[in-house]
Image (cartoon, rainbow, N blue to C red; front, top):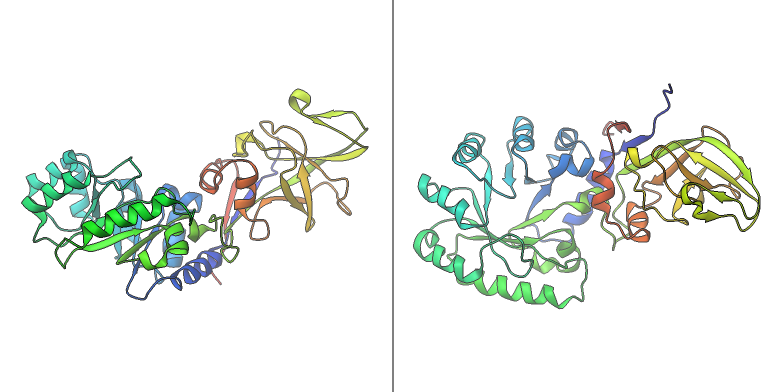
Length: 353
């Protein structure tokens, strides 16, 4: 038995810095919806609500249980981003004063049956081709039921991180052409983090910001990673040139080396696909993963780390080592890494200073 733990340290000061920085990109009339689904992307939802409530205008989640937790902490707008799927869910949403995304006819039928058109966000498909009404389909609904109603028209960009993608221009054109034909009470929302950063003129009435809050946006170094994932060294071994390390002998020493075993593996949420050469930090110095991740251990080349010893912390991502780095170098996305950390990793939420 061991009491040693990997740790995930979460810093709310960084949330606040990131939000303040991102908000400077948009006009003051644009309202800020913080997307905190999936336990705030693994950052402890109830804690983050308490620490950012004064900076945001509302929250976006997917699960009803998360919405209920937020409502106990905040009186601000809460959006169920995939809406409701039954009469019971509609009544729950009404009881808790939740906004609803409506993206198909089955959902809209529930709204019609209750003759309740308040707090609706109507999602249209402009090119993502997942959820949302087709434009012609929406026009028919609008003419019959929504022409005199106040609601929010929304869509979702497929390639907002790529400023040169033609799909962004096509989606903006479709969305704006449609919204220009609606009554003046209709609000508009198209911007996620990538859109805010690359196309701030498309902020409109509401922005829906997720990954940027947590520091996983890849294209701006001013946005900091709010998580530090670290684990201690539990063994250091010298190996000779030509010797192999780990399962399948993937890593072969080109010279004599020192290899540290770090107490974290895929059972903790470290992807088994992490490649040799992935950067980590030990004693404020860069080292590299060397060998295949196993259930409980990750091996790292520490040949060049000064004064390396058992118990030293190895950081896999942190404010000093952006999560986007490990994501990009391993063909992953920051969202995946944030939400994959397992329960046996100790989560430490810092006090707001």
